[in-house]
Image (cartoon, rainbow, N blue to C red; front, side):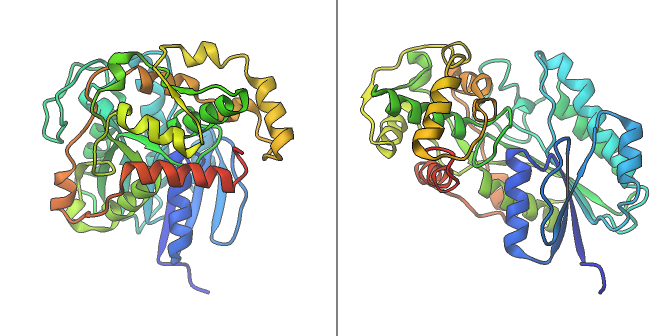
Length: 352
């Protein structure tokens, strides 16, 4: 049999963006998928995984130099570090190692899609210009997202393939064992609140309860990744991607509480990193009581990221009109997005 026309190399295959993107390609059909991650993954028809240490240039060359059939690279890997300066070296190195190993041998490479975020606009540093637009002025470095894009722009010069960069907001969707997953954090926090018989309290400061913000559904992001990689109008450009609406926690939080049949009490600022540190026994008891999938507590507790999300006390949103002008018209109501994500976690027996 001849090789499929499209071969996607998904880097960061077990992360929230990579995993949902692979599921999207599987549902579509017509793609061969190769997933890269340190943990590897369970192979199935049309999808195989390569465990690789992308921080190791030699290991990357050894594992990836045979991927001659790759037509599209979707880069969504991330290495967390304590400071913006420390994020640069590992995250740039991983992208460089992937592209340096694959691009010279993939004769039919058509596109490299890069996952970024609102860090490009300085969202991690403090109040930034909102709504953020792709044309906004850069901020003082270091910033690994910018360095990654600079590398792709320079590498692409004179080449037949193109690149794109997507800038989602906080991503909400299914994934396990990832450091950034606010949807899972809310699902577990609410489930534990219900188990303990207490109301659902917003864990951030009162000033964060009324900010205006947006989020990005992981399934919507998957659609945008494919659109950007296959639409010539998106070539060599960056695009903000979010659900298309904005909300305030003060409006949405009571509705989330109702999704778990919980009452709401006033916000109570707390460090989720500290408050949830001792909850492993409670989680283990819930797994046994409700017949949940046996995920270890460390894989369902992205508390550091969640604490950052709920502590943000300035408007956090971006303009997505550029993507719409270039042809990406999809959107989803954020309340519906959260409801469907929680339902998905219940179907997968992650929460009761």
